[in-house]
Image (cartoon, rainbow, N blue to C red; front, side, top):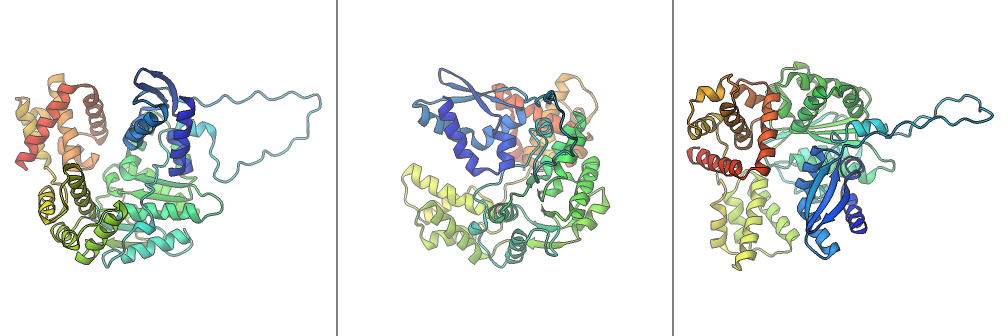
Amino acid sequence: MQAAWQEMMEVLQKELSAPAYSSYLQHVLPLRLEEDKLILSAPSDFVKDWLVRRFGQRIEISMAELLGRRVALQFEVHPVKAPAEPEPQVEEVAPPAQDPIPPKRGARAIRDIADLEDFSSSPLNRKYTFDNYIVGRSNYISHAASLAVAKAPAKGQYNPLFIYGGVGLGKTHLMQAIGHHINAQCNSPLEIVYVSGENFLYQVVRCIREDRMTAFRRMYRNVDVWLVDDIQYICNAERTEVEFFHIFNTLYDQGKQIVICSDKPPKELDLTEPRLTSRFEWGLITYIDSPDLEHRIAILQRRAQAEGVEVDQEVLQYLAEKIRSNIRSLEGALTRLLAMSSLDGRKINLDLAAETVRYYSTSAAEPVKVEAKTIIDVVAEHFNMPVDNILGKKRNKEIVVPRQIAMYLTREMGQLSYPDIGREFGRDYTTVIHSFEKIKAEIQKDNALKETISDLRSKAHARS
């Protein structure tokens, strides 16, 4: 078992950055095999959830091949404790006092790693490179600026680089491509931190609650390249904005590269800290627009080529004409088309493409968002209570649980930030985070609740 696990870790280590591996996977260890279950030790619930989400299925398949039988993953959480400092060695003749040798560049204190085991950089997707990015009229400026930053981080005028545009247009791809390029070209490793605005907010909330803000600030202020995705999720979270502002200033003053992505330009972000807007405008602001028809066809051609499948030009053009503004949905439609052909043994043609397109919005090519009010109404009706109870202050269990379910569904289906949901329900955003995480955890072990959520989701979609 140990040998199989070590072989699996060697494969995953090659796909992750050094900080991501040391923070997420280094302390995940196999404990034992129990019949068809592989029991693993994880340092925290956060690491456990991340591992299951990113690599769970792949680990189960690979371990089955290595062990010769199918296994399901189970976790036990065992927090990693910082090692005690060693006792000083007593020698007969004490050497002359010397200044301590400073740690090497990029080294991080062991105690900090143990304290912030679940707060390191999110891993970069190995598919998000400049080689895999299709350039067109809608994104060529953002691509050129990103490539310039990747070749000479913090050396030019593009600091910070602020990229904005709609959902699924390639902002995250460009941002992570910068990280991959810098990792590949630098002789000495740089500390690259990639984090979403949502995760940054979550980190601040947890560190405040657990009294770890000093270690949190120290960790973030020692990076060389800071990649911040979906910055809009920190809007209206006043304490989080203040922490972001001070970290931004520290890194900028130290000459470190900062790249930020958003769905809106800086001046349209609903920030409570106005100084952030001016900071975002210090460098270069670029916009990614929706791709034109030729660009969308080129994206589909590249994707089909990567999948090793030949698709007629008329089929690709049909998909590109029907799904116009969202690259993510465009690629998803092709994936669904190929899956339907493979699983059902059907020929890839216009009829199959037309059947595929029915599952996607052909106007905006984005998942349909459900209004918070609709979700609240549906939940209130299901639990046979007035809407005022959901939005009110009563805390008895028969009201709190429906309220938490409504917050969970609003986050999932309304695609709102935690602070925005807090305003809808008249609650602090930390309460929303707690409610979301609680229902998310309960769904995993309560089938009745899972069915209730599914039923409510269907009813809310039907009314939207």
